[in-house]
Length: 131
Image (tube, rainbow, N blue to C red; front, side, top):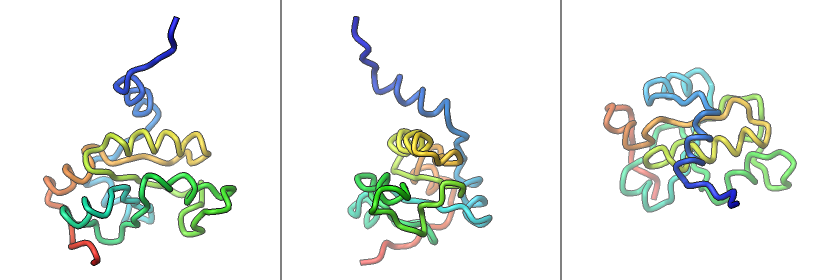
C-alpha cells in the first residue's frame, strides 16, 4: 500500500494547521509588528510590484534564513515567537511553507489567503520592485 498523497491533500493538511489571514488582516498584522515575507521570484516581483515594508526571501532559502540553528539565518527574521506572514503569488506555496515553519518551531507562522493576487484585488498598497 502506498503512502503517497496528492498535492491537494498536502495543501489541505498544511492549511488545517494554519490561521490564515485575509489580505486586509495581513496588512493590519504587519502594522502591528508581524513580518510579512514575500516568497515570489524577482521576475514576479518586478511584474506585479511589492508590498511596502515586506521582506523578500525566496522560497528556496526561506527555511535556512528563519531557522536560528541553520548557520545561515537572518537575525531580523529568525525569532520563532514572532508572527510571520508569508505571501506568494496565489497562496499555495506560502501555505506549504508556513506549515513547514510550524515544524521548525514557528508556531505563529501563517500565510495570506489568495496571495498577492488577492492583495492587489483588495486594492491594498503596492509599489514598484527595486531595480
